[in-house]
Each structure stands twice: as C-alpha cells, then as structure tokens.
Image (cartoon, rainbow, N blue to C red; front, side, top):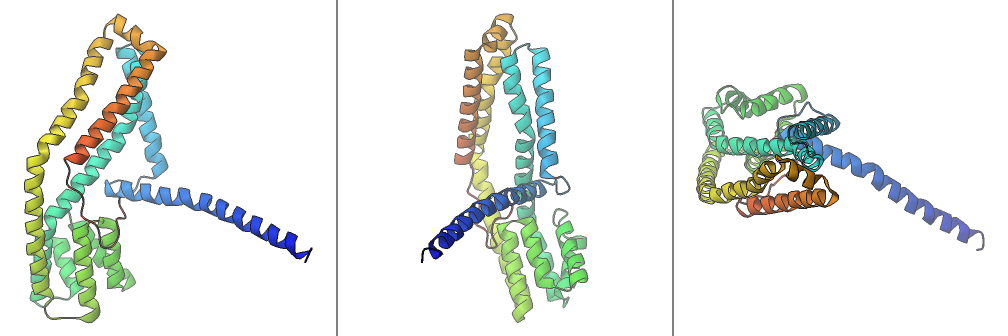
Length: 287
C-alpha cells in the first residue's frame, strides 16, 4: 500500500501535466485554422496568417512614419501606427461581408438554374456543371470545384459538404442538405423542392435588403461620429503647440483612450444597426 500511493500520485501529476500541455499545443492550431478560414472568406486563401500579420505590421509602421513626418507628433504617430496596422483587418472583414452578401443575392438564380437542369433530366453532377458554366459569376468557381472534386474522389456528398464549408453561408447549407438528402434517398420532387427553396430565399433576401436600407443611416452616423474627432485632432496637431501637447505622457494617454472609446462606440453602433446573421446548419466555419 505504501508503494502504491506514490505511484498513483505520480500518475495523477503526469495526467495533469499532459492535459495542460496538450491544451497549449492544440489551442494555437485551432486559432490558426480559424484565422486561415477568415482569410479565405475574404479572398486571401493563398495567404498564410503569419504573412498577413507581418504585412499589417509593416503597413502600420509605414503609416506611423508618414504621420510623424507630416504632423511631427510622436503621440499622433503612435495612434496612426495602430490605426493603419488595423486597416487591413477592417478592409478584409468588410470584403468578406460584401462577398457573403453577393453570394446570398446570387443563390436564388443558382438554385433555379439547378432546378431547371434537374427537371430536364440531368444528373446532379451534370446540373452542377451547368451552374458552373452559366450560373451567377460569384458562385461559378464553387460549383466548378464541386464538379472537379467529384471527378477526383467520386464522393458527391463529400464534395457538397466541402463546398458548404468553403462558402460558410446559411443558404448554402440549406442547398447542400437538400442535395445530399436527394442523392442519398432519391426522389422525383427535387426540382419542385429547389424551386420552392429559391422562392423562400428570394423573399428572405428582399426582406433583409429592405430592413438594411432603412437602418443604413445608423452605419453612416457611426462613421461620421468616429471620423469627426480625429479630423479635429489632425487640425489641432498640425500646429506646433498642439503637436507638443500630444507628445507628453498625458497626451499619449488621452489619444489612446480616445482611440479605444472611438473603436468601442463605432462597433457598438454598427452592431446595433446590423441585422443578426442567420444561424448555419453545418456550423459557422468562417466566423
């Protein structure tokens, strides 16, 4: 019994140590995968996360150097460095949202074309090829990728699920689940189901666009409210007295505090004025 107790204690210490170190090994990999998925959603599938971060840092240093030369205030240069370093993240975040909106608007036409091809007697791979050739331009690469994936692997279900993971859109999840179910169990009403789905999606898109148009003033007001204080700052800092005031420790603290308040207020106003994204069926891989 006296020999068993140290062994059990050592085993417990080893299990705790292994659990802690394994969590540390896997957490950066998960974060890296999410960052890579975010880059792919913004159109930078060939760019590695480390390359993107290094480029953002370089842009930030360049922006800070320009601000230091033009304005002559080190405090303003610090804020300019942070702002320009964050600019690529903001740009590709907006680009990702714009691409998702374009795909969302293109899905009804793609679904109707797919339904028409199925109705004429084409198989599902042939219908995908039709959409890849004549469908909406923003969705053609995805359907061509499905056709190529199916030719290589012979697994249509896997090709569809991989397309859903790449597109990362709730409408794409509906289409993928409908096509997977039709492929597995068969059915003669696939064309009618797709046309009904297209009508529902088109109505949902029209409703969302109307609400977004009415709430667009919130986004405009947030941008004006966020930009106005910094335009005043540039005018004040362009004078030698103002530049010297922002070079002090208190001035730098005021600038950083103002930047934090501006960022939080802007994000809060944009979030209030933006419709919530629909929950995905297959999981939000690109969030």
